[in-house]
Amino acid sequence: QVQMVESGGGSVQSGGSLRLSCATSGYRFSNYQMAWFRQAPGKEREGVAVIDIFGRVSYADSVKGRFTISRDNAKNTLYLQMNSLKPEDTAMYYCAASPRSTGFTLPTAAYPYWGQGTQVTVSS
Image 1: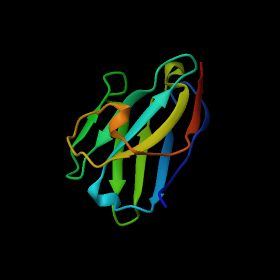
Image 2 (image 1 turned 90 degrees about the horizontal axis):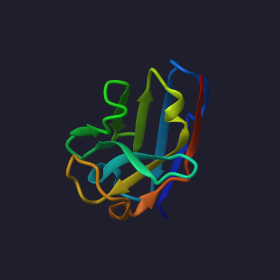
Image 3 (image 1 turned 180 degrees about the vertical axis):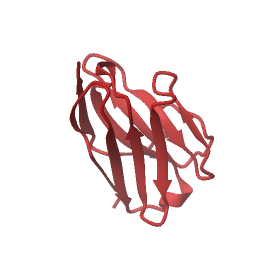
Image 4 (image 1 turned 60 degrees about the horizontal axis):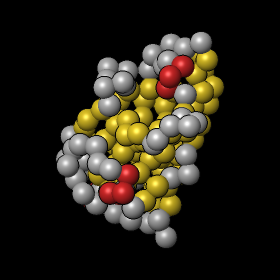
């Protein structure tokens, strides 16, 4: 059974930092492209960062230079280091896994496995 559990969300002030984690089990983590998505109230879910099986990464323009995605295949865990947080980063953050490895953001339909989400709230 596939399990993906996010943690590390919370409330911070603008300019602060958070580190999200996504602990996974039930599938071969190292063979999957991993991604972070976020969804703010009333908005569509959007891709934030991607890391493929070769370690290639890509980011949404809105988070470039502030967020860093990484993975630890030995621990089957995905991370997102978020620095210089802004109020517009407020959203529910989800990790997702796709068997397609492109190094680029894929549509949500390409990700069969999802976590339940962790809330990030940034106050000004």
